[in-house]
Length: 273
Image (cartoon, rainbow, N blue to C red):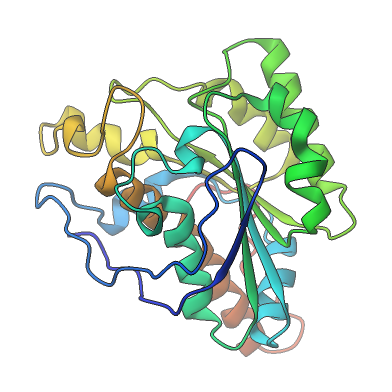
């Protein structure tokens, strides 16, 4: 069964214009999952297309552990906005935010959900400063695998957006997330080369779940509300995959800090899983 994300106290949440702002949200402790959906360690490892460079993530994690204010953000299309979760607190973005709040209860945190449905990274570039960068995020999830066309133009657009985020004064850590439709379709393959070039962590729903669905252990209709969007279970799966990568980074940081002086924590940049 899916691991349960920890319940946390309500948090202040902001949103980009047109996004679904969620204020005073509470995170459910035990949402139901279909019994055929199994996220075992092998599936979680498979979801990590590229582990990436943890340097910036470690900086954010250290600040959070010190109790300093942290801004968690996500930008993308309708999946990030929250379609079709039955309540705002069941979106993948809020569930990931729940992990941050549970892991670092002494750090004041703000969530920025800059997801807007039916938009691609071209539009994301136009609104990036207004909806995201002015909030000085510390950690950003980007998600456009369902919306960006599979063209070199869109690959360049996504790269431009990512480099602008990385160049922001707050030096945010960035994680690329790849969602997929009910049939497994996405523009992931067009976007992965950008992540490899920039050394970013990349997490894929397709790599994790499609083998399970093709084996007959799970019906894709169990995780989707329509041909494109996740239902509550779909959002929960996506969140679990992202949290796995975040927890791996935290574990690596703590293992490195506990090691003798001179040891490099993790040392897995660019490795899969």
